[in-house]
Image 1 (cartoon, rainbow, N blue to C red):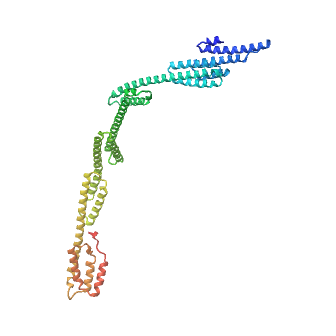
Image 2: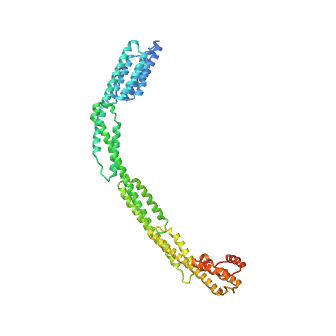
Image 3: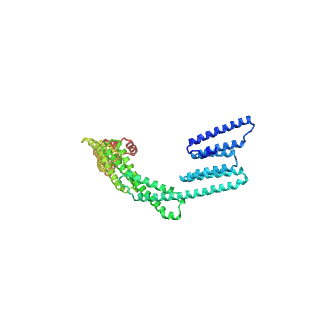
Length: 483
């Protein structure tokens, strides 16, 4: 059995065949023991069977360990040791097998895995202190010391490897930093600028991911790491600002183009279109957005000024076009409002009053300064003509009143004096002066009216004077609108 265990092939199939062989061999031994007991009455010792089981478990565990399956192999080693607890030879065999496996891990650079395996082996061997004979305790202690020394060796190699890898990584990062910092992506190619920006960010992240704890002070000074990281951060900030400016400039161009389109559409709309106000309001909104972008884009100031001028020009053009239509309507109404030659003053006043009201209503629809001034001039002219007709109307009323006074005086002047007929004078005053509304008379006409009235009034009897005044006050006056 020792021969087969020592000559086990590296091929896992041979290990599996050997494991099967051990199982068959164990069955043969059990069968042999059973036959021997029947024929001779001699029974084999139980420890021989345990040794066979231990060997079987160890061979299986060694086979699994060669496959790299330490967890599964540990189960077999634990099972084997449980068959013969405290067997120092088995402990030493387990230790050497695991150390050989760790050496393979170390040779392949798997230092952390080797340390983990050594930790598990240390725990396992310490657990064997409960089972080994007292005389083997020192051997167990020496095995633990050997494990600790191996762990120290692995740790030193791992530190050295980490130091070497980190130093190499830093050298590569320094070279990449110099290359990227020296590169200037061409203007007008945003894709290359974005790629360069991303490369700088990735490189900075690589710097930040480096474990500098494995470096010495000399290494840190030599690498100039801090300066390179600062340069990368500054380069990223610069590109970010350039990207933001480029994006803002692109936005400004797009907004200006959109505003110009709105202005063109507004200018092309008819004077009665409801879309005109929408287009102009949209341009106003775009201008407010451009104001917010001025701090980021220097050229936005010029474009903003130009666009504002275009907006005002378009507004003036639209205002003239709309105002022209309103003005044409005003002129047409003025033409239709001409006063016929045979018209009375009241008819002319009514016509001009309507015209003034119409102009006032249309005045609010005029937005062009040119047509506003025209409307103001026309309104002043209409007011002047209205005033003239009002004066003319008063003048005509006054002429009629003076004529009535003259007629009355000429007809009743003979009644003055001693031969006066009070009743006739009373009737004449009523007939000729009773329907005159002296509110519409000028001061001279008022004096004439009063003089004539008083001259004949004094001729009346006292019992006639008060009734005359009352009757004349209550009489219907000839209205001004009759002239």
